[in-house]
Length: 180
Image 1 (tube, helix red, strand yellow):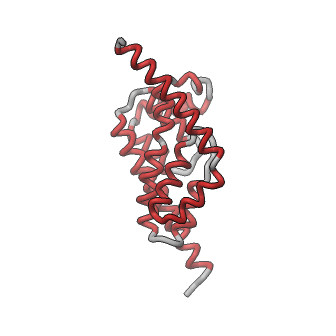
Image 2 (cartoon, rainbow, N blue to C red):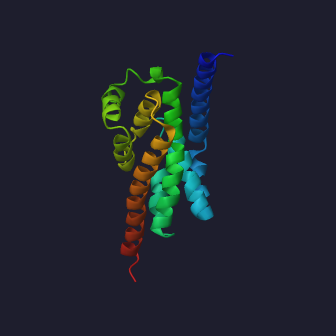
Image 3 (cartoon, rainbow, N blue to C red):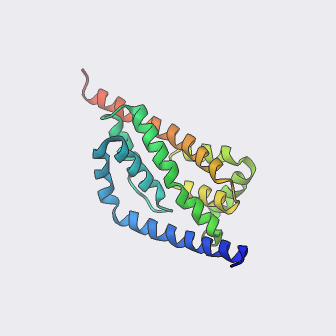
């Protein structure tokens, strides 16, 4: 099989995997919160599942906020940041498979030049702020063939920063609600 055919096959498989994974996680989203009962590994899994959906909402930040009041916020942020970064591979794979699914979305057309110009810095920034559109940046990064290690590192840095803020906010609110 030629290199071009293998690449085309890999892109189609990536697209089907992303669609299947997103549908599966969307179906089990109510049960995903129960994984947090397993401590840091559970938080890692919840964050990974919440970020693995492409353009579908999942309850990851609420779990991080809550678990920040139960476990050490730094540990929660590290577990959730790593899980979130791995979960964002779904958007990257969707872009790698071909961006035809989203190329007409106005927001995607605005994010793509930003990711092209600023590269990993755009990924760090966009993954660090709570927004439902980060998947579009991941899709753009995959479509532009951003090196996977660079994408993952940028996602991890941004996700960990965001999760740290939510975990400490959860820990602070628990102290505020139950002083002493």
